[in-house]
Image: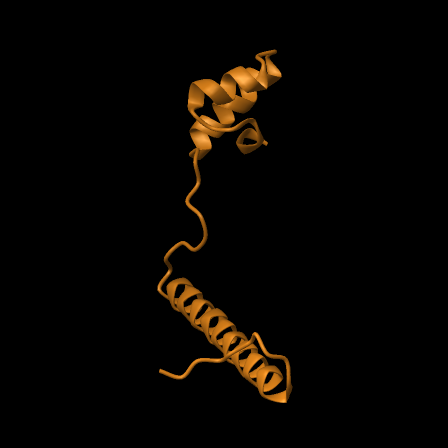
Length: 88
């Protein structure tokens, strides 16, 4: 197996590190392209993308009304099993 000895500084070490960094960057670019392609394909089929909603519209509206009526947001969130920021 080929190994890169980075304990000794020099042009060979610099080149090996640069090559490894280049391959890592290329893989990152390809990964982002694959993810974008998958997202586009999902949208074309009419499927939802992104993270699923924690609350449906009815529950969210009920929580908003309870807060408007004076309920403490932290308590409403705890009862629904979500974080306070999810309510906003």
